[in-house]
Image 1 (cartoon, rainbow, N blue to C red):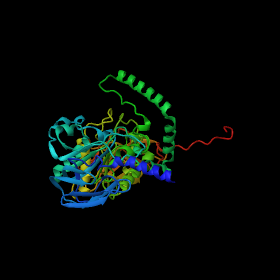
Image 2 (image 1 turned 60 degrees about the horizontal axis):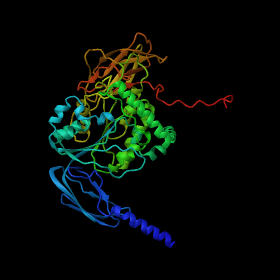
Image 3 (image 1 turned 90 degrees about the horizontal axis):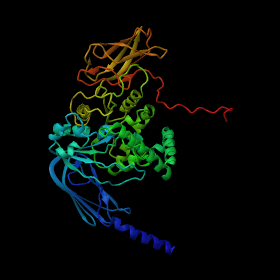
Length: 520
């Protein structure tokens, strides 16, 4: 026992220098923004038992570092303040965080369309030239895929300048600039988007493992992980890299394909991004989240209908900040224009996104009109950001503006015609380009879909019919990867794609075929 006690003592003494001075995660740094009007946690690490004093804006708070070295205090709610202040922390050493503002903080997350830089978007060069906005602060999270929970990262806040803004998320920056210019308060933007990332990578691994709905997802991940043991993994990466180099040569250097990533440290493995990218900032005071993701899950719309709400609910639980606003961008139109009005994986993913509106404090920016068929990264990020910021201005800042795209409300059938009622949220329907409502399809009991003629009646109804369907039973609108559709509210917001049927989804996993006695 004496030997064990001695070893424990030696281990503690060896480990203690790691916390021998005050440390704080990278999210706390010069030029940062604290969220106004809420109790903001401030945390870090020091030698266990060390007295910690935090001072900011006339507040002084004290605590002690715990047995694991971590300490946390909460600042009382503060009003917005564009005058730079200093956050002082005194422990075993002293730390001063300078040029701190108080305002609105938003997390900008998702995959490449959120990560898409300002200088890549339409008029991004002009936007960057007007980005000398010292009260907007930006921070980019480094990309780290791991199963090991991370508490810190290397990053830093910067004031918005032409140089810092041009390399920041276009959607995030344009969203934040609108807020800043309208609300006249400082705005902090955290960009932690990862191109090509799957939704399951953004969720704590154990949350997926403990949910029977994702049994197959976890099983598939486990199988892939087992196949990528060090030797096999290296061989697989060598093969993928060789193929990537060949593709680059074939495509030319102007637009090379994405370089393959190791699954074990990449952006598809369940829990990887949560542990490496999200966890280091969980708890930092935010107003809410804007999210642009779904392309990587577009073949799994059925699963996404459960996975996406889980992600939102789990983030809120982890943050311990209540049901903060969570607004997302629905998938844009992409791929070849629709020739047949039936099954579409992208339409099913859009429907899964729409279903998440059942959660409180959520909102969806519909951009079925802003995509580019040949490019999964549409360059019009201005309208994307504008449709997102409408949700925030109305739901979070009390303004009265059109903000929600029209949505399907009801269906009636009369002989050979179907009438769809659309909730326009105080507006009315307006067809773009021509008077006919484009993008409608109907089917009968045979479930065979046909393009249909659509006519707007009464402001918020669409009468739909097809000579090929004598007795329609269901209607679909904009139900394809890249639909031709033209219905808007009179305020300019596109009608949300919908279907009135509940036919089985093509992305629903098929049950395993049981082996017959002869096959056994």
